[in-house]
Every structure is written in structure tokens, then in C-alpha cells.
Amino acid sequence: MPASSSSPISPVIDQLLDVGSSLGDDPPSVLTVLGTLADTRKRRGIRHQLGAVLGLAVCAVLAGARSFVAIAEWAADADHATLAELGVRDAVPCETTFRRVLQSLDAQALDDSLGVWSLARTAPATELRRIIAIDGKTLRGSAQGGVPGRHLLAAFDHVHGVVLGQVDVEAKTNEIPMFSTLLDAIPLVGAVVTADAMHAQRTHAEYLHGRGAHFVLTVKRNQPKLYAQLATLPWRDVPVGDIARDRGHGRVETRQLKLTAVSVGLLFPHAAQAIQIRRRRRTLAGKWSTETVYAVTSLTPREAGPQQLADIVRGHWKIEDQLHWVRDVTFDEDRSQIRTHNGPRVMASLRNLTISVLRLTGATNIAAGLRHHARRPHRPLQTIMAC
Figure 1 (cartoon, rainbow, N blue to C red):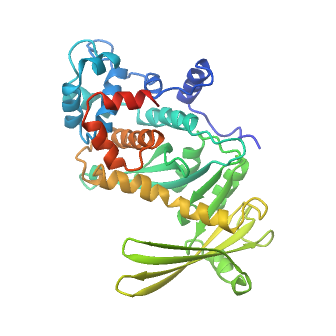
Figure 2 (figure 1 turned 90 degrees about the horizontal axis):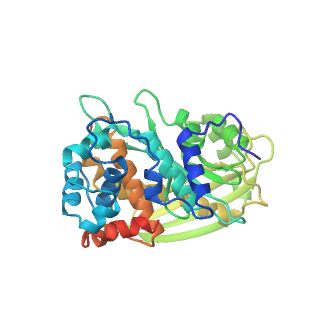
Figure 3 (figure 1 turned 135 degrees about the vertical axis):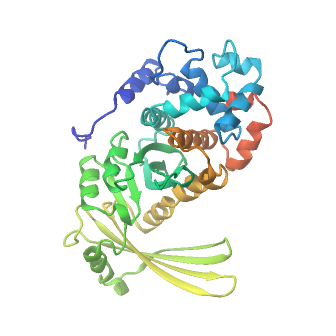
């Protein structure tokens, strides 16, 4: 089913699609995409081109820089070949330039452009579905003066471990109204979207159906009638469809998944199957705990069986482990002192890009990847140009 005509496409995306088509079958590179961003600075007095400043910032973050000062220090130590390749012909930008440019950058345009790049780099084969996890993260270090930290909602590719899009959730709202805004810029025909219980909304199900996508949504007590209906299904009569056992982080966990078709009667639009997952955990101290979780999906039994759905449900938490946890622990994001204007979001976007670049170039450990690029000043640009 084609995308709904009510789904707006940003002008920057149209521009990037034109860039991609002009390059033939090869998707645009990171530097090409960054070069499409509009420079909002007044022409008079501009000493460094926007593309050069952004290219240096991306390289510095790939080498482990966490602040504007660290970005400027990396740029000051960059070799002449790297500077020339990025278009720096005269003096190297200073910390004030990086701060001013990155804080005033159109953050949504940046995320849109990087989303087009990552979508092109991770296009699934014809016979495969793209699986997208949706989840939000608060930039705790950006809180100031009683104003809560910036909250960002991201779309994350299960298979490749890269960010496909990101939007800002305003302080006076929550993630729910931004769900469709985030996905408007992502092709969804045939894709599967996963999300936590906050997004088990009927409007979301209708939106995804209208875009030709499927969903796997966790259901909790924030939807009391639906939750009660799922909990009272005859699960005892349903055989276990998938069992998985994991050991790690000081515990042993067993997960059992049951699946039943619900073609009619369920209080959720387009739901085709109901899912029950029972988790039993034992800590090293020998303490047991049991948790039962329910979910709904629009995938029919012919389209996805128990093992496939178990993989999809487990895969959703990659956005926590492979994105949010990495930004918190490896980049120490929550203690960042960048708080003003668009600085916090732009830096989060550069971290997303760094994680995506490292994953697409084969890195399995992001911290090790940062250390690798920090040891040789020419490595970050080499890696970025390979993307």
C-alpha cells in the first residue's frame, strides 16, 4: 500500500533524494549529505564553510570528542591532508566557531539528512522486511533552571543497529504525538515497527496500517481494557511456541512465548495475533522472579510465527542496548555540559551518526572503535569517506 498523501516530506529530504539520484545507484556519502544543509549564518564575516565545520565535528566525535572544546582540540591537531580534504584552506576553526555553528544549526534538518543517508545505506533486500524500533531518551545533562532536559524520539534499525530518524519531543508534550512525525520521513511499506506500551495507541495502529506497515506493540495497564482482554485469553490451552534461555549480567533468564490468532473481537485495530511472553529470572543469589508481558501484532500467522515474533520482540530492546546505553556509557551523554540552543540535540545527532558509521563499517564494540580512530588523526575521515 502506498504512503498516505497526508504524510509530509521535508524539503531537505527532497533535496537529498535528488542528490542520491544524481549519483546513480550509489547512495550519497556522509559528507555529501552534510553539504546539503543550509547555512543560516549571515554571509558577511563567514570564514569557514559550514561543510568544513561539520566535517571536522563529525571526525572529532568519531575520535571520541564529547564537547565543543574537545572538537576544537581535535581539529587543531588534525593533519594537513585531512584539513584540505574537508575544505579547510586557511586557519582551523576555533572552539567559539564550533560552538556558535553547532548551537545555531537546524537540528531537524540535520536529523532528516542523516536519516536519508542511513536509509539508503541500510535498504533491505526485496524479500526481507525492515524492522524499526521506536523509543525515546532524555538528555539529562541538558536540564537547566528547572527546565527538564531535552527528550528525543528515535527510530532504530533492528538489523543494522543504526539510527534512521530522530525528532525532538517538546517539554509540554510527550512521545505519542511525535510518533507519526518521526515516521513520516521513513518509507514503511512492508516494514515492521516495534514500540513499548506508551505507543500501544489505536491511532498509531491506524497510521501504520495506512502507511502499509505492520506493528508489534507491547501492552501494559495504561490500556486497561485491552490489557484485561489479553490477560483473560485462554493461554493455558495455547502451546508454547518459542523458548529462549540467556545467561549474563549476573542472572539466568528463560523466556516462553505463546501466540494465538485474534482475527475478531480484540479491542485494537488491525491486530491479527496476541502474544504472551513469560520471563523467569534467577539471580546469582538464587532469587527467582516471574514477569508476564503481552503484545499485539498486525502480522498474521502466515506472515510471522512464534520464533520470528520472539526475535522481533527481543530485537526491540536493541535500541536501549545498542543506542541509548552506548550514548550514556561510552559517550557519557547524561553528564554533558552542553545545554543551550540546539547544541544538545546536534551533539546527540553526531553521536548517533558515529554509532551508525562504526556499525556499518564492521565495528562490534563502539568504545574500541572510538579508541581506534583516536590513535591516528587520518582514520576518522577515511572511515567517514567509506560511508
